[in-house]
Length: 204
Image (cartoon, rainbow, N blue to C red; front, side):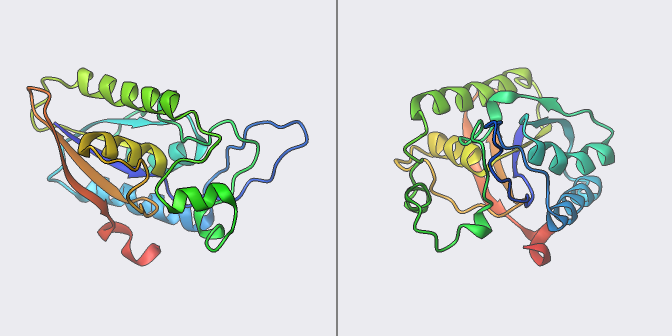
């Protein structure tokens, strides 16, 4: 089987609310166009036999997956454990608005490490568990493809685990980009590509 890992499309910023509710921003207008491009790719890339779409519980991932799900006639499976490492924070600033920031959390991300507020062990355990469940559901899938629409940190951590990398945030991933992991029937996993952007090249 093949896992196609999709980073969500571009979201808007979310200011902190007085009651501290978790931020869960929607896609920006550019992000909606990027999501539509992903839907076009899903509908027209006939070499992919997509049998399942899995999404995190966060709005930006679900809105990114919607056009592809509609094009393929699939109902996305929600797995809350695919959420980003900042799930539960009361505000959200998109990456393109953080460039050049001297915020310590952003500096750690730029260096390839998770922010200090992240429980790395817990994040690793839930990401590993989410992907293990997906693979287990498709253990005998052959050439089927599963689209997993989630987040840059989630995808990066999974790729780092599979590649044995020391830094959990090694790869800069563009919005709506694709990364591929092949899984054999014996369970062996191989990272095939990272950050494919041909379907959204003019939208980044």
